[in-house]
Length: 140
Image 1 (tube, rainbow, N blue to C red):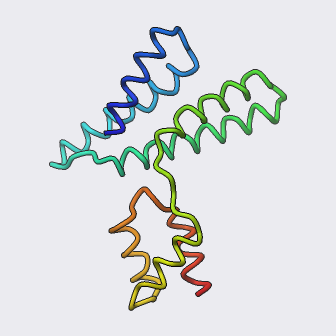
Image 2 (cartoon, rainbow, N blue to C red):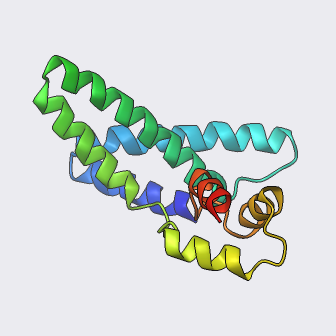
């Protein structure tokens, strides 16, 4: 599971005294633990697709934070955030390309938007940008 890899990377960052890596890994791990508690209370389990979503949210927050530092001209913080983004991006699966999405849509017998979206949500959750799927489905 992704969380196991993140925890190992966190330990390695601790041993290497890498504060920047520890900061971002700790945030992701903490959020995982909170989500796991919430899921357990609802009788569910956290899957890798949930971890992908969680990492995506952290990346989006880092992007917003980076934009703020760019605005004020703090290059040191911008570089630190870029390093953090690169670190946790490695734990995301490779997303399907536009061509792969088009080919998958063409295989479907029902090409209506709801049907296409349901197919991708069921079969490719966490491996595809659903906004891109929607855009491509509307263009076909």
